[in-house]
Image (cartoon, rainbow over all chains, first blue to last red; front, side, top):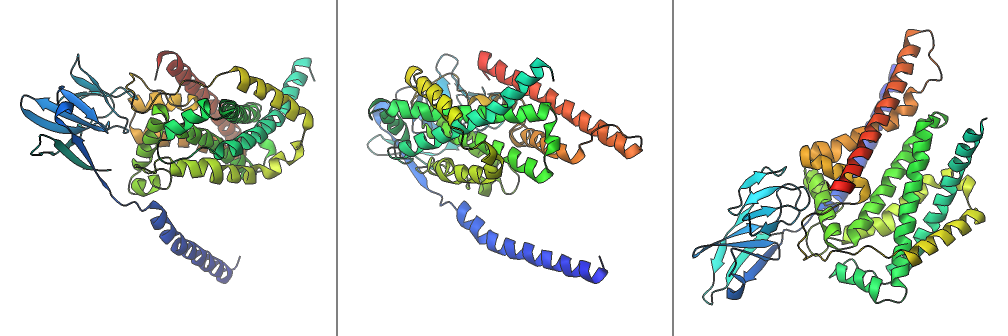
Length: 133
Length: 300
């Protein structure tokens, strides 16, 4: 192929690639867009009695008179954790990661601690936990 | 040709024909299920209603499950047969790539079907898939949203892929390949009879409610090996790089094909390269089979 032909072909390919990318980019942005939504989980007084209370993906942990909330999502690949009342640990049913009741990673492939979420106490004794989904 | 060779050749030719019959039944039963299945709201309850409340729902669900599994297993065996007997040599590179890609898509259809059960296993499988995609550097967050999104519409995108995009794409990609086998009434009849008997006599497995607490969750059978790898290796490596490398090596086989070692240096390198890669893939397959078996018996 002559140099002029090669350059011409190369330029036309470049034009195709840029054209396709210019079309694909808005399509990709549209398809991958997701509005960040917030979810609120309310723990009524009768749902705050155990050491670890589970509701809709949140564990409300009772420590004396204090409460803190932890996300029940395993930090490895997002499976919902089970709480073992005997060992006082959270266990992932998918890949076996273990977390302490404080949310600290103990063992398994997860490596990161559980996400801690602020808790708000209402006048009627309800505990509100708001988090992004 | 020896008697054993003749039998193997016969089985080789039966597999894709029977597989095609399974595909027809799978599509037909899927069309029936679409009338009741809804990917929004309480999906688990919807699936349980299909199984226990809707007339013959249990039959169509089991027929759809059995035919889908049979089609993919037969396609896998058909590909393995070509791979082990080095029959990828008869294909052009482009043809081979399209066929392997179609097989991967078949497994993806099975996977989305597993997610769409809406039970605990399905939900976790979807969640894990989403998090594996999110582990891709820079673009992971955006790419994962093309396949699955958390929240109320968690099952909607897998549903679109399972019912529309993937079946259409698979049939489009294999249209030339299946033309010579289609239609074959004898195999369709045998396949239909066998799968009807399966759907009537084998009850669907018990689904785990999403809110139930279970000690161990298993993914679909073909991902048990990956589930085990995810326990010991980083997410990106176990979930994407290793499976991707395997498929990549399988794809390039026809590029380096050689019939016999030639005397020149390049010919010998190509011969060693093809055989080396072939045996490497056989070892990798055996190892994956071992991981799957181990996970199926003792848990992942």
